[in-house]
Image 1 (cartoon, rainbow, N blue to C red):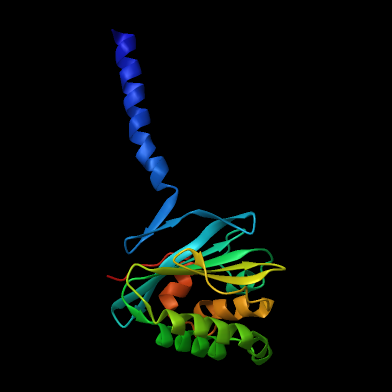
Image 2: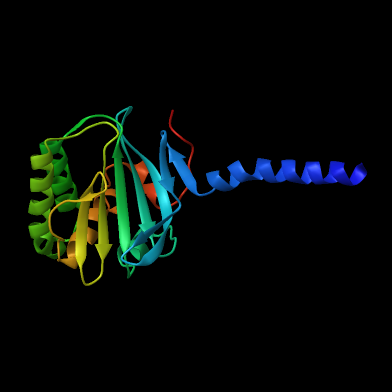
Amino acid sequence: MHRRSLITLALAACALSLPLAAQADTVEVAGVKYDTAADVGGKKLVLNGAGIRYKVVIKVYTAGLYLAEKTTDPDTLLHMAGPKRLHIVALRDIDGNDLGKLFTKGMEANAPREEFVKSINGVLKIAELFAAKKELSKGESFSVDYVPGVGSQVLINGKVAGDPIKEPEFFTALMRIWLGKSPADDSLKEALLGIERKRRR
């Protein structure tokens, strides 16, 4: 009888641990779940950090950044070799033209002049993609996957959109929107770098 009780307790403990194990594979941000690992270009990446983009007090979107290895240093991150992924999920409807303009403005404000000039082809392409999309509705998502030798591939709702942007400078300039000297949101910058801070309510 004693042995049966021990077995029952062991099985119960295993059952309780399963949800915890499942939870460990995702990170939830504003109701959006980010996998803690992703495969990009045949390489396994880890979630470096994820957070919320606020406009005053309004939640606009969540963003998650995947790298080959974690770092809290923006300069190290920007110059890190290997594949990378940026994944954004809309928390409200976002006008496509506005999104393209904001990306262009953010890249121009943060990227060194030479880097931005080399990224112009990619800037125009991503602006055209979002203009054609017209609106990123609440709950919709897009990713930008960078793979060395291939370029930056935009995916909208998980589907490939357009050809890869071949200029390697483009992805670095894109990352500067959130990690540069004048980031879109200071708290989101820290979140993407995996730096914990008191959450805004």
